[in-house]
Amino acid sequence: MTSTTFAPDELFDVAAMPSTAKIVHHVLACWPDHGKFLRASFAERLPRLLQTTETISEMIIRLGATVQKGIDGLAEDYRFLCEQIVYPEELYFRRHGEYRLQHFEDALEQVYANAPFMTRYMHGLLVSDAMWVNHASALDHLAHIYLPRVADGARHLEVGPGHGLLMCLALRSRQIAYFEGWDISETSLSHTRQALNLLDSEGQVALKRRDLFSTEVRSRANAGLFDSIVLSEVLEHVEQPLIALKTLYHLSRPGGLVWVNVPANAPAPDHLFLLRDPAQAAALVKEAGFEVEATAMFPQAGVSIDRAVRQRLAVSCIVVGRKPR
Image (tube, rainbow, N blue to C red; front, side):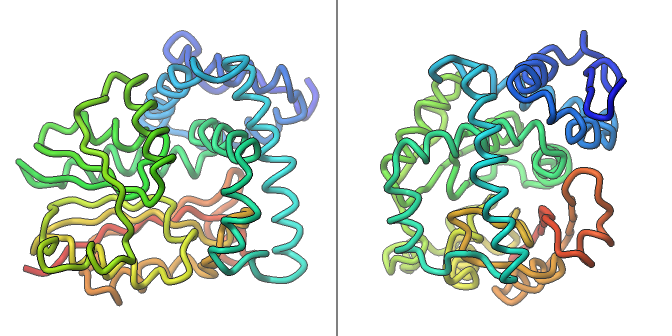
């Protein structure tokens, strides 16, 4: 067996995880050399995380129904993400010690306005939620650590719901009574609406076009609207992350919870805010006014958290905050 060979049944029960095995099969069919990475990624997953991975994979396959070439297309776009998007940005980050872009206008012009590029980018990120252990671990934390702490009858908001995976996990929570999703882009909301429809969740979530930096959102009428707020992989896309978090504080009820997921040292073509040290994530949430109740750090596959911090490698940083009563 070569160093790049990877067979799913070596590390998980294929019969119990058919959707995950299917995605792995399609990824390796178009990218055999990715086996070494996948071996490292799946070797670290304990039973609960494997179960969460299968849940994520089931949703990815359902969302793949609208993609040209189906799962094959998703797998090809995942390879495109890794080789043509992340790798060049990683090279720039290593050479210059900063992200390539710092301003939203540049990201809008170079990334968001390029529809074909954005389609492949988003497809690749969707697959990464199952294939990258740090991404899967973040969703597992949401499902099994954060959501059980949310109060009964809660009003729940997700800012930037994207593919709808996190919202669907929240929809399984018995405590939450009301669900809302915000995005600055009507196009993004349309994609979320389509995704929720494919995942049998359309109509259960009120999707609204909102800008966290607008005076309307920060008005007195919106104070204390939500008991639970999720902000996942959004802060790295804004120039003023502290203002965004202070807006969440304004929107939270006293005693309300926030779940923040922000990557450290994770270059991408539309990442603007560079979190250099994972510990800064909790400090930022605290500076916004929240009490920090829990944190978690999930490094990239095959890397310890100590090594990730030392070598400034990608880490998914989770912070659970509570607004004081």
